[in-house]
Image (cartoon, rainbow, N blue to C red):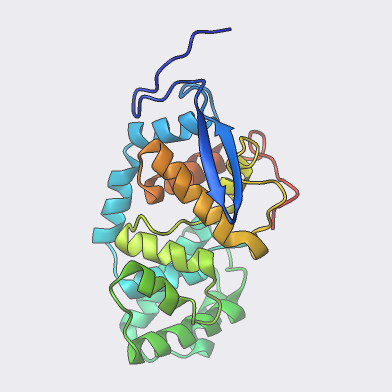
Length: 249
């Protein structure tokens, strides 16, 4: 057996086990070595090494509420980050030219090819309706500043679930009280025991979130930074390293 090695960031041994308690269920998971792809230690080390906390902080200072609302409503399930960015650019330009745009106006443009050869947006009618309704509501009823109050406020909007609400809150505030449970996090963290394989995101989102926040605490890193690290790197490595699971939605 190899001698235990201390993690350079938080001092944990490769043989340590980290404990979780969610919904009355208790378990532990292996910490592992920071230089082995996919371990709990690896993701924390990458978060620190690549300074993802600085990236999250830069997001919060370089954006505004309507931009994040539009972008996150355009992103999510079935839409790549690149496609969402291209569509968001178009929609924000339209809003800047005419803040009173209707859902039909937005839909008409989203049915056309997007810039930079990105093709056509996948859900033009559904997302246009959601954006128009969300903008009408949020302009009439301005959002609160407190991160958890903001998440509760966002959950009242059509088409905004806990993942999208957490996404907007993280990008705007960098809050340590929310997590974005994306499919790539589920694929990366379920096999190493941080998430339970029997969980399903549509029924157990709060369990995923609680476990992830505990994991970030064990690693002594901001959850938003850890989330961004895993999403970006697992997505880049793809299904060869992080294949679909039965819990995929």
